[in-house]
Image (cartoon, rainbow, N blue to C red; front, side, top):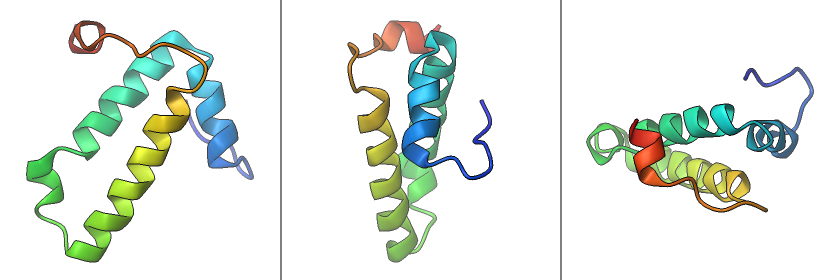
Length: 75
């Protein structure tokens, strides 16, 4: 799903959370973005900023629903 112009991150992630497939894809994207090998290539400030951003997104995706099993994400 694409974030809409003017849409808050919270509203965008709520739309994703409402769609099981979109939620799986977004969580896989977050997993890729937080891969330690990838983060290690960034300067400390950027790494800290993105780590906080991605943790916030993961928290919002998990609101009001159970965690998607890792086996589902890996499929």
